[in-house]
Image (cartoon, rainbow over all chains, first blue to last red; front, side, top):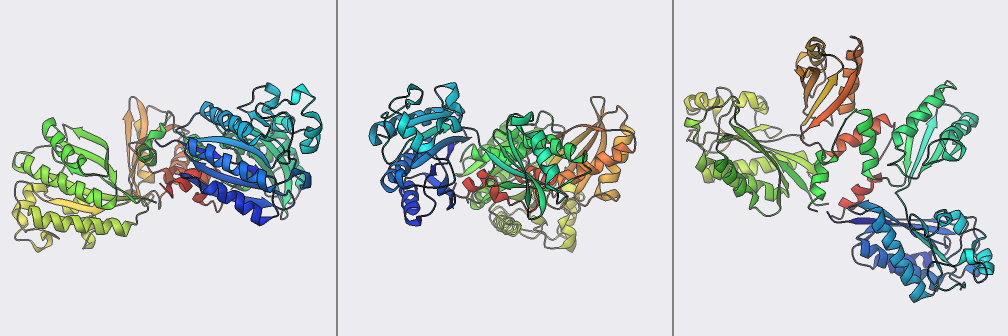
Length: 298
Length: 298
């Protein structure tokens, strides 16, 4: 099986299309890399690139993207709604197939070391790659953003980077890490009242007592109540458990689920797991899936 | 996307392991072919080989298997419980990915023409490849088996082969066709009484008024009632519809489904379809599945 790693670098540029283009081109020229998606948001002034490839290819790709962004983006002139601390703000590695989380952690460290040494950009390892427990949390690493970090980095030992110098240039600092695939999943209810959606979001999300790997908000989307979620680890908190919990909470208000949607991409395994649950396939080996046999030789 | 075709030749030899080995070796030496499974049954005196590869590779593989079987198997000395008419009895082509059913029909015709011309074996096209409506049904094509066909082939115009001579040698005749993937699927009930399993099998199977693409039997397996099925076209009659119908029929006896199982292989899409149904993913595009993007370049 050819090992495949996903890499989702976030760049602090969502308005100057020529700059975004140049960064993506620098990444796309790396052999054995496939750019799946580029999403730019001008309010956030940020672009998110989704790419896949062999482990070494995605590391090289990320390095080329970080180098190009350092040339093209000056954080002193960057304004946007989304919190950020670097021209390349965040680079997560995600295991897709034939690769362990530990291998993705190693890729994060390898990239971080090179970025610190060759580009003199401070690097913070985060999530699964973090070297201190509190740095697992990206929001903690990025607190105060570029401006706050600039003041503290050389004086506050808590802000000493994992790699690179303890001082900020125009490219700022970059968080590099490893994490499971994230699934953006929305559930629609048969009501135009946002209140039950907010209550249900509160019931299912981790922060207010719900399921471990769920972040959720209640919204009104085109007049229909929606529970909007990020599922941060579908192996620990599978989609079906989230949907069935929402179904049960909705029934308490006399409501039902009208439909669900996946935003962006999700791994096949997340759907296999749901089929396995609903079809009661006890002890089902995913080698029974014809395509899983094929990829063994692809 | 590299097109992949599955081919499942059935040979009339399930006892002489050296002969089975020689046939499988003849097929395995064809480049770009992957033998996934070989199942031999000595009561049936029959072996079923499951292989995948590029369209032209599987045609060449099937030809090599048919040629080897013609050398090694003499139908005049073959006895077994399973009905058969040829050394290579049946060769179905199954579209797996990037291939249409019509392309598989074309492969069946191409193989049939070559087998008739080069090996002088009569060939009947069946299922989707059939040239007459009644020949879609394999049981009809094979009626009377080798012995009956030997008497009729030269005199009965209904038995004129699609390719090859109207006379039988020791290799008999071969049915070559195209069909959707077949899923062997069993549902277990929480009872040791076979009667409700038989009644439910009768309710869901096509032959007695049930779903179009379901063949079903009620059995007792290790003391537990089982509805044992072949789902002959999961795109028309999806797994979830079969399971939910069985669940509803079982409830009428106060029974529940304890578990389900897949025997052999099934296509990923059959599970995606089930996940889509249960998770209410309206308008879900299977391009949202990360691995489906990958195979686009594999």
